[in-house]
Image (cartoon, rainbow, N blue to C red; front, side, top):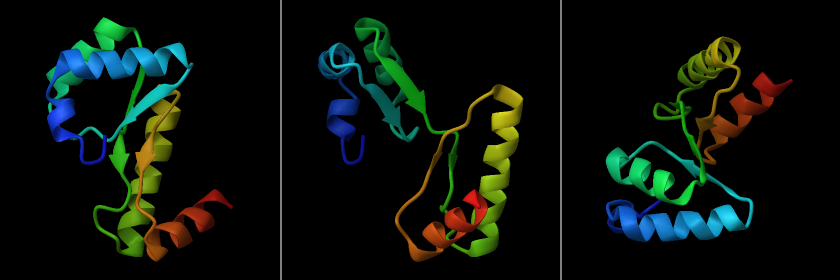
Length: 102
């Protein structure tokens, strides 16, 4: 949904896009920004699989902040069975994610 504010506000158009993605067996990953009512309506119209990001991992790109967000994602995963994080390809994000994955 990056830079898709206009489309993201139009539930009918977004629903058509979601329908095509659904027929191809794809899941829509959304960072949680924008207008959620249009997103929910589009998902309902299309029946598409929709995954919303639980945490933005590197809103603060400092190493300690990223580590804290990764720990929050771990806790959410243990609590809910799944958790989805979003990060940018900043060096600090990649380094912390690699260390955390090990």
